[in-house]
Length: 318
Ligand SMILES: [Fe+2]
Image 1 (cartoon, rainbow, N blue to C red):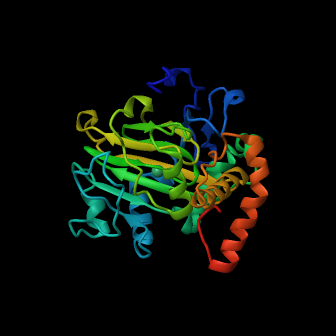
Image 2: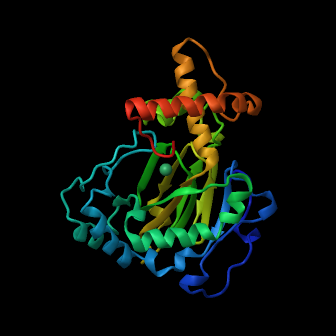
C-alpha cells in the first residue's frame, strides 16, 4: 500500500492464480495514468520466478563475488547514515556462510549489476519487456538495463540515497517499507546536490535531513508489490523485526534500472549547469523550464562531447 496516497493493494489488477516463469510480468494500475516522471505503486508476479529464489540467488552471489559485485554494509547502520558499502562481509564470512546464516537478524547483502551474468541479463530483458511500451510513451530509447538485488534479515535498512537510473523496484520476498521522495523534491535533496551526484558521482551531501520524512511517499510492500520511481528520486528502505513470520525472515527486493533518451538529456543538462555555476550563475534545474532546456540541450551535448573527447570524462548514462 502507498501509505501516503492510500492506494491499497486490493485496488490493483489481479494476478493469475498460478504462473510459470514465462507468465511473470509487471502490472501497472491505471496504465493511462502511468508516467515515467512520477513515483507510483506497481504490482508484479516475479516473486514466483525461479531465478529470484534464495538458493538461486546464493549461486548467483558466488558468480558475482569473483568480480566484487557482492556488496555489504555494516550492521547497525541507520537510514540517515552515508550509503557506504564494501566488497566483503564485515565479519569475514565467505559467501556460502553469508547465505547459510542469512536469516540471522541484521544480515544484509546486495548483488550489484546482475546483468553482467548472462542468464540474469536475459531475465532483466524479460522484466523490462513487460513495461517497455509504457516507458516508450514518454521516454523512448531505453538502454543499459541493470539489476540490483537486496537480500536482508530485519532489523535492516538501506540508507537514504539517489540513483542515476529510472527504477522498477520489486519486492520478491518478506516485507519492507520503501520511502521515496519526488525527483523534483529540492528540500530532500537540493538541485546542487543532485547535480554533484550526476556530474561527479558524489553523494557527500545526500543525507536524510531532519523534518523531510513526512514529504516521502511510503510504500508498505510484500511479495508482488513494487514501486516505480524516476532517476534521482531520493529513497531508503527499512525492515522491522516484528514483521517477521516463522519461516519468512528474509527480505528480497530487486531494482530493475535503466536509462533513456530523457535521463541522458537531463544528465547532460546537469553537466552544463555545473559549468554555468562555476561562472557564478544559478541555472534552472533540468526539467523545471522545458523551453530553456530545449535551448540548453545542444550546448550540453557539445560540452559533454568535449569533456569525453578531451578529458576522457566517463559517467554512466551520459
Ligand atoms: Fe537505490
